[in-house]
Image (cartoon, rainbow, N blue to C red; front, side, top):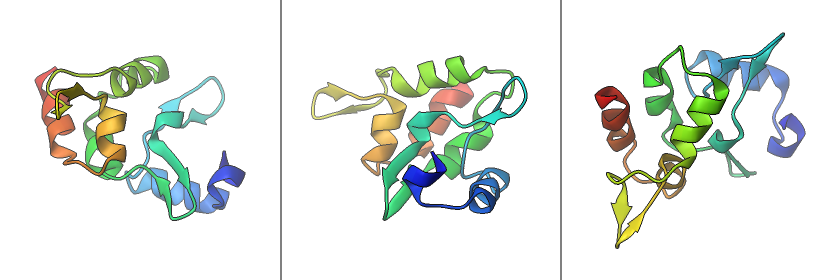
Length: 105
């Protein structure tokens, strides 16, 4: 993943510690769910993740976070289309909508 993003491991760790990436404890290391990476040279990390990451429940597994972020949510509608939180963020829409959804769970 680091080579795809064209960033160093140290930069990845700074992003995690700064709250710009969601990390989930794995067996022997932290896992970084793939949905949060834009994988574009000009935008390696999904916009708005710094707002969303701190409110994701700590007890959620990587699979639970993936499910939430990748499943369309009725509160995230644009022009009649229901978007997933990941799609919402990738478009650059307001991350506070996702924060509100997470806080309501």
